[in-house]
Length: 154
Image 1 (cartoon, rainbow, N blue to C red):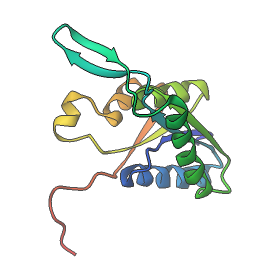
Image 2 (cartoon, helix red, strand yellow):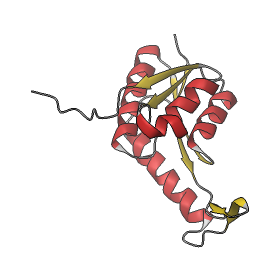
Image 3 (cartoon, rainbow, N blue to C red):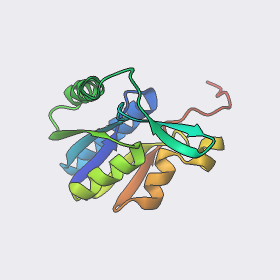
């Protein structure tokens, strides 16, 4: 059914749920899994000035440090999904853009994303699952990972 599956992670609980679903699908379909993590290039940061949006340097971390941390995260996550064939992708950019770019480059049949940001203000101002669902070059599966604001009874 699927041969190339792309899933994003930032190490959060909701991303872990999306990865778990992607791993299960990859096992069932004998598919290759592409673990993707987007990171912000620390050389620039977006700031809003009176003249509009401008790029300003962010001296907090070096590009090497940010990329290394992202690669370490992907290495740790990939250790938990063995023996599925896994390729990791640490790419600078906005998460939705990076997921779509990787999916296009590996000719993916499926992108799995978590549902965080599908409700409330984030849905209106732009969320990763919403952006990916509208711009994806392939199928998109939105994993139910966001917690409900209503309490659940046992």
